[in-house]
Image (cartoon, rainbow, N blue to C red; front, side):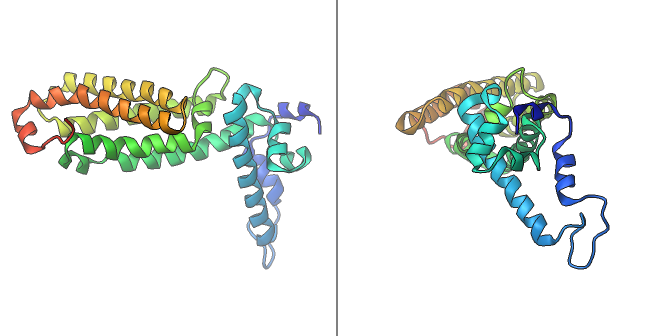
Length: 246
């Protein structure tokens, strides 16, 4: 099927509903879309297969370099099969982006918890940073779909909201960990820490294997050396938590 189909305007939900037969009254043994439940399950499995393939193609080629034909090839299906579920590349990117953002919210929500303030600084950095770094390394398509002016607007808007929420969580955690910081200083420290993390993550993502591990250690060292003097400025906090890293 020609790539011109990519200009159609239907959303992933609309194409998905067409596949499910939306609007038909379900009969006995059928799901809400009027399709047998086994058919719905096969459809969901096919969508998951296509999104997994899309993640590989976006990671390898970027958003602009990806195409529905390439995604279909990666998934091992015909372009016609792909168009049964997604009308174009943008619809695939939006669906995949929403899934990844949902998982990212769960990841940073579990990482930024107040109980981390009971840990020494090096261990606190491990427990917060490790899951965030692991998620990005395991899902390189996430970075592709959240950066660049060519990315569908709905993804960038959701990313902006998520970015603001992460910055707020960072400030809340640091304020709890360093309670003597003034509100203005806590905001500046959170913004600087967040910026350091993003810059370090870019370096981490651009390397693999032992070099990636080395850059992870470097990022933690930089953040530790930035935050440790702030602990030393607050004697009560410093004596309450012994820092293990020399």
